[in-house]
Image (cartoon, rainbow, N blue to C red; front, side):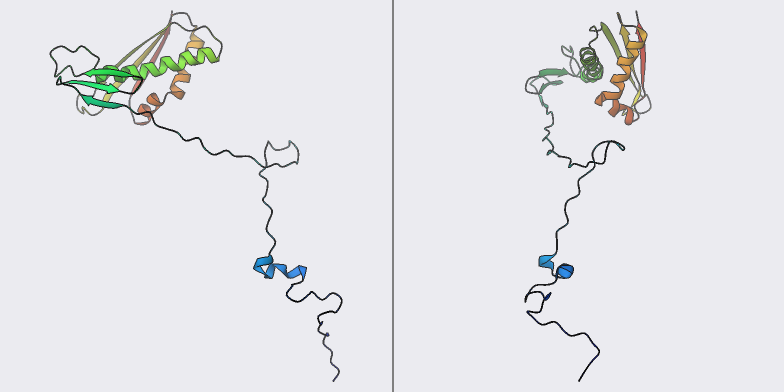
Length: 199
């Protein structure tokens, strides 16, 4: 009986795919034969610098190790020893010792804050190819009289002997932007004031 439908293709007819093979236009229906998308290159550079694209090569992060310090008691009540490997020092508690022969925790705290400033400023003077500055930093703190767990004030005074005002403030601003000790204190709400003077 004559029909109006299209004749089904048989294997072997021209244009008929081989058995077990799908036409190219519907390969995506077969998961095993689905084409894999090509990885897209991440654009590098600013807009307007050409239409070229290249892949950005990423390197694995470098494993970081924390600095560690071990503190232990000694035979003397109120005297402690800190051991950081290359650095070994003693801490005295002036309230427990009749004579304190070594710095106390307050001294080391202020020294770490002011020492961070001196280290950063010295490094910057080398990086910026400037004369090594002659500098003295005075550091002090006052504990809150109503809450002994917090500071009422922390003061830093920078006295430059041979650096002009503009460069002195540049050094101090750089310290305030980079020192982790200073920024940890400030972000925690510590009231730190800074004074800069030049001779």
